[in-house]
Length: 310
Image (cartoon, rainbow, N blue to C red; front, side, top):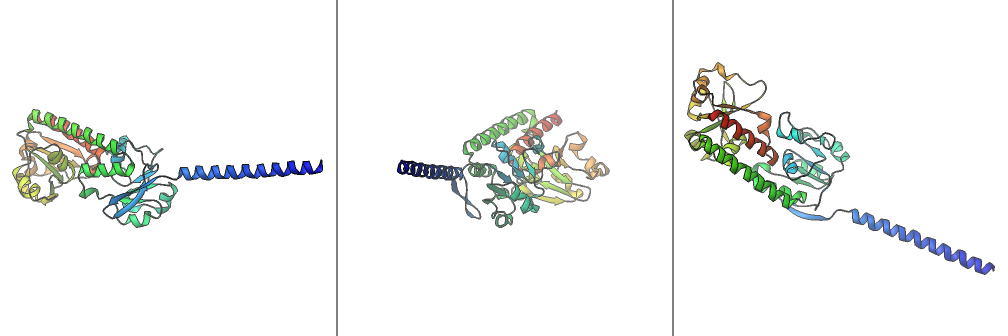
């Protein structure tokens, strides 16, 4: 009887150990399952291994590309008041980490990111110790190249294709409406500056890019020959030569504390000003170059240009 009891106890002990081992193996397998699947992406700074389906993304500046693809980042660089991004930024879901060139490493670490997308090349080495970090050379990529790359990074390739197609549809529709409103003949200028100096934007910078590159609007001859054809972003000129660059319609980027241009007779004598064909573009609305912001910029420029053409 004693021997039987000992055998029963031994068997129960073996079963208990087996159960513990099985539970341990199950936990290990579950932990392994939670490890994200990685893939390698080619970047301007070399190959980087990133999660195929990142869950906690931090992004600098090109924030709206993520929103356009249906991704809400857990951390971003600061959003300017008055920008299109204010429509989608939710401080309960996304942490504002401040200026893109001044991110605090502890604040980044606290968000437990699995992917970081930066426009600050120096941040790659620093933040790469926390999570896979990819440099986005946004100023050297076309909209299509940048959004396609973002789709690859976020595992949203199909969404990127659709977002780009939707944007092109908006651009084409807006272009046709503008042509019907008289912009097949009217020229457009984009200015930013004040009484001492005015920056004249070409098709590679800011709202000039929306006007000339996206919406295919006509530039005055001086802008076409001296800026666009020479592949320049913009040129700074004195007010004395401003009339040479002034189109039938002027889009002026506006910001707090800017000069009152009505103090200049050169400005008030421009045909566009005399004919009330001035569009004031809020600086913050035109600041970002991401896809979400670009759609809003196209809408604003289209609607305001049609108003002043009447």
